[in-house]
Image (cartoon, rainbow, N blue to C red; front, side):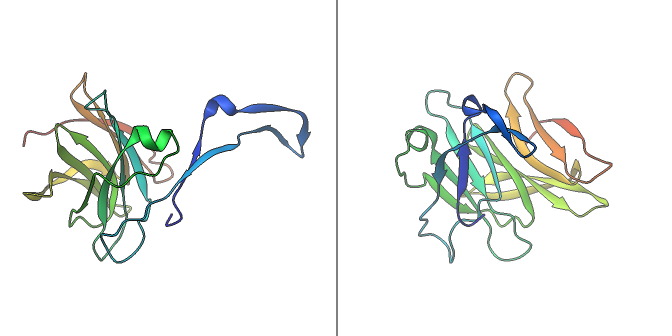
Length: 177
């Protein structure tokens, strides 16, 4: 994940005239996004992604790093230049101080972050920003919580659980701050 993100467009999915072994379709890679972050000791580890569409005129790509120790980062990138295959600097890089991050969403400038806690404990939900830090909400998410997405119409976050036999897709009302 330190090499970046491979970008595909499902409109490019192509049925082969002759299958390659048991493969009947191909999906060519459209782009490759990487980061040259100067903040932090290492290249960005692209552990999870989401789109911040809270400002529809200028959506942003949100990325973050999973880590059990150290200083995992959250990053925002303007999405339009990336889609046009132009390099773009990060709009924001923050150390959230949240270990085991699995996903992130933004709502009205506030970051919401999911953090897993193993195979038997419910996940945590964190909220905050670079200026005020992050606040923890214990047991707000299912066991094995992963990525987050914000649904404005229902004012809720969506996540999914990763563990076999307990794979769920869950909507969580956005807690009061």
